[in-house]
Amino acid sequence: MSCTYRNNYFESDEFLELALHSLFVFEVPIHTLGVYIIVMKTPNEMGKTKFPMLLMHLTFALNDVYVAIFALPRHVFPICSGYSMGILLSIGVPIWIQRYIGLTLFFRKVLNSISFSQVFVVSFRTSSHCVFRKSVQLFGTFGLRYSLPQIQTSGSFFH
Image 1 (cartoon, rainbow, N blue to C red):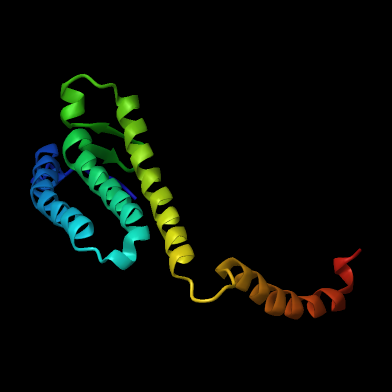
Image 2: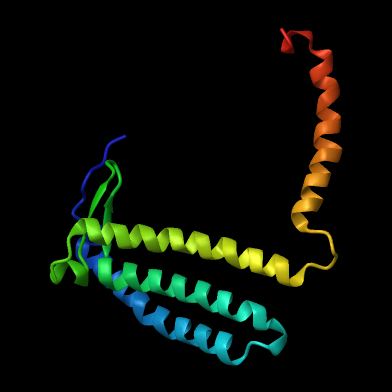
């Protein structure tokens, strides 16, 4: 496999900058509409999930704005490297701080998604049994019951 540079406009830094800035123009009104819908149009019955939903939406929006305007990361894929072309570079923020902010925002998205799903499970479960308890019961019933005869019949397992 060879990586050849074809001097194409679509491979240039100008195209990446134009594409990400164009995405930013479309992202900001859509994220603003999302915040408006979450804050103003969410029914009162969903009061427990309003703040986690807003926090998750704002985290994803901040990540989009960071990538499209502030950092403009350019990844070089045959080797694990890259460089930044955004506003933070032009005001003199070091690359390691930009990388730290980007990774923090990325992992914050994962953390917000997990915590939002936990709030959803706690708020809207239908019975008194916890979902975790049901999954443990299913594993104990089917997983262990059907794997034990295979372990007992294989004689070389215990030697």
